[in-house]
Image (cartoon, rainbow, N blue to C red):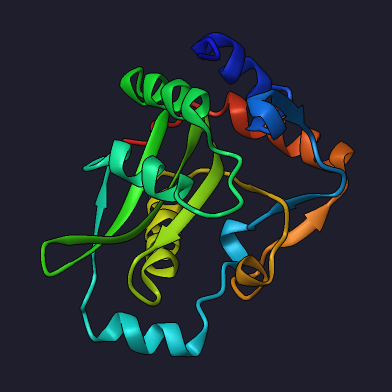
Length: 189
């Protein structure tokens, strides 16, 4: 298990762990770095229609263990047993959180990440029902905005995140934003 203080210090310095081949843990600090600017977050029109139907309910930290394990269940994953144990411990300490999309009393999708000050570091998402992870992301952004968070780190850019307004910035710019955001007196819950 990665010690909680080491993990938190890594995030404060702009690095995060991933399990690689043979389960070795490596630390990454991408350049460029992807973020989702909270003030420019865009909900695609088709997803707005889904949201209006009211099929999904958002819950926070209701099933963290199930969320991280669901995120790990894919063919090509960087989430191994050590990563799961490490983030479970961070969750117990109040630093790692899950945002979950529920439908008909079932967990249909979600995401997890780490909160430090006014920064949230998105780690992974999953879905069992179409659009469920996207609904969880919208729920996360609404939650972060309501608590006046300043930074949503997505690590790398993907087409999935680009549709919501994710951008890439230089590592240097990212580290400046991170320093300011991590010092903000914010609480995720």
